[in-house]
Length: 230
Length: 405
Image (cartoon, rainbow over all chains, first blue to last red; front, side):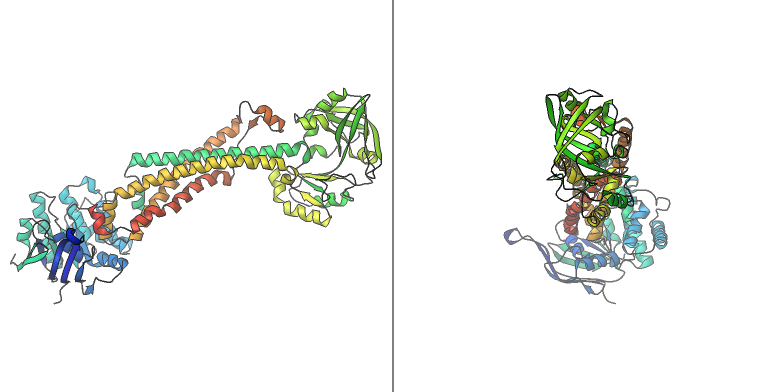
């Protein structure tokens, strides 16, 4: 089985000369289909930078990232947008929903960007809402939802386009214990039922305990990469 | 959904958006009203001044206007008048002769420009006959009658029924002499006319000045000036066929055209200032809104929205805002203009000046699609074009930096 994500010799340096910060140093990493992997490490260890590189949000200083067999170097900004739209789902720490759209519209929005027909968009958005346990709340705007509910909408938005991989950066950081556990359970069940691949940057032990693969980063390098039986 | 999103985005800050909308609406309202009033006032000014004596257009022999020699005549006015009957929009055309000479009574004599007119048709071209204060205007039955200005009558100490001698030079250079009876005295409030202008029947004028069937001008009029302006190409074609020239209102009264042009310069500067101020205030508001949402745009980029789509969404927000504000401004402007149309507007202290130009003391605005739409469209188009600034900012966004902002 080919990996979904391949990183080879990945380095990222911010700034120059004495002010240079080496956020990533020669990282090699493969993410396999169906993985639910956590990326842990202290602040500044390079978790978010690595997620940004894999998510085609930023360019490495050196090295190569491939997503679903497609090398990201040398492709245009427009093609990178298409790649993010079709193959990558994002879940952010701060939910980052569009405040003027309802839960359903936030989810449908991604499908509209993909050019999906209106009726199909609606059906798929409603299905995603049901899947994340928010039936009946589809017409609420983010401001009228709790943090846990908003993060569920964000997960539904990330998944509705059926991406190759979902990248989540500290998805439980703003949630209380109950909502954090529910979110982890949700991601696990989606992984089990649909084989969705998750790469989760986190400090949260509860998330790490539920992952099947645990990658530890220190000073921009992968310090350990271990699979568990979780 | 992008359009819906753009519309909802502009209402995220309802107070700020409302203030922007009201600013644009107020400016648009002013522009609609001011343009409707000002351009209508110009129309009134042109019509009023041309109506006093000139008519909305004239046919003459080339060069006559600058050098009005008596022998520069339209030799066959009947054929030209017959042709003019077929020009749409022209309601009346009438022949005129113009002589220059002296009016004398006893020891007193004053220079005069005397116009030979057709008493039946002239009132449809010129309002002068309606300005007769004492006596009456000329009638088709009149033979040796003269109507003259109030100032001239005073200078010559003439009253109704008095006879006055006319001395001039005829078409062939011989002396033209006549004695005419004062049947009316007009007061146009245009000092030049009142002091040195008189009318007599064209038939008598032709005899006195030995015109041999020729006339110096054929004046035309329509329901209103724009009707005549619209058929100007046809009128010029008629003139060419008869070997004469057609003078439009601006050629007849370049002083009026220059006065309007001078006034327009000031007005245009005010309009441009209004448009520029409201456009920059609106753009500033929208640009601030774009800056505030940089992080959100970063998220949109992250989930796969292309920069140009985000740019279009921002541009659409500007268009929605400007259409809404200016649409409201058009409605308010039309309502205000309609109200003033009913009651008129007088500018205190200027009524005497206006009267001296033959204009009414009250002005009434008039709406046309141009006057109603020009100002608001200028704002909308300026915002649409200058919207390139926030659009370009969006095009330059990088997702990671934007999300970190």
